[in-house]
Length: 301
Image 1 (tube, rainbow, N blue to C red):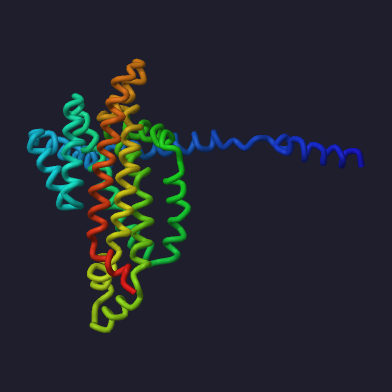
Image 2 (image 1 turned 180 degrees about the vertical axis):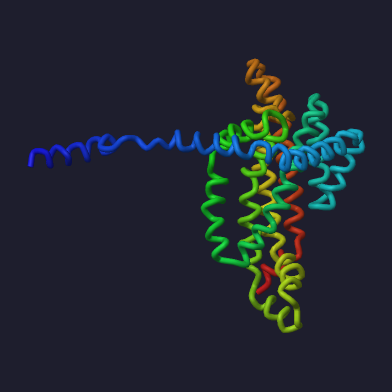
C-alpha cells in the first residue's frame, strides 16, 4: 500500500521522472546524419544545379534592367494587375528603396523570392490538384503540410547547410519547403469549392475530366489559388530574410549585418526595404486574384 501511494505521489508530482527521457534529439540527429551521408551527392548533383540555374538567370535578368526602366515596368505591372494607384505606389516604394542605397540588395531579394515561388508553383500546383482529386492523398498530405508550415524557420537551415553548404541554394531550398504549403492547401480548397452545377454543365456538354479541370475548375478556383500564391510569396519573403544567416544575401543580409554590428540605421534600412517589397508584392497578387474569372461566379446566387 505504501509503495502504491508513493507511486501515485510521484505520478502527480513528477510523472516524467518515472521513465527515462526519450532520446528524440539523438534520433533526429542520427536521421539527419544518415540523410546527409547517403543523399548529399544526389542533392548536390540533381537538386542544386536547377535551383542555382534558375536563380542565376532570374538575378541576371532583373539585375540587367536599368533601374529607371525597372521602375516603369513595376508601375505597369501594378497598374495592369490591380489599378493605377497600386502601380504608382509600387513605383514610389521601389524608388524609395533605390534612394536609400539598397537597390542591388532589393534585386537579389526579389530574385530569391521569384525563384522560390516559381518552384513552389511547379511542385505545389500539381500536388494541390492531386489533393483535390483524392481524399486519401489529401489526408496523407495534411500532416506533412502541417509539419512544413509550423516548423520554426530556423530549423530548416541546419539540414539545408549540411546538404548544400552555405549560399543561395540552401536558403532557397529551405524557403521552398517553408513557403509551399499554402500553394497546395488553397489549390486543393479552390478546386473543391467550385460549384457542382458548373461541373455538371460541363459534363452535359461532353467535356473530358481534363477539360473540366483546366477550363472550368481551375479558372473558377483562380481567386483562391491566387490567395495561396499571395501567402506563398509572403512566407517566401520572410524565409529569404532569415536565410541571409547562411549567406542568401539581399535585404536580409542588410538586416543581419546591421544587427551583427549594432548598426541600427543599416538594419532599419534593410527592414524598410523588406516591408515595402512585401507591400508591393501583396498588392499586386491581391489585384490579380480580384480580377480572376472565378471572383464573380462565387458571388453569383
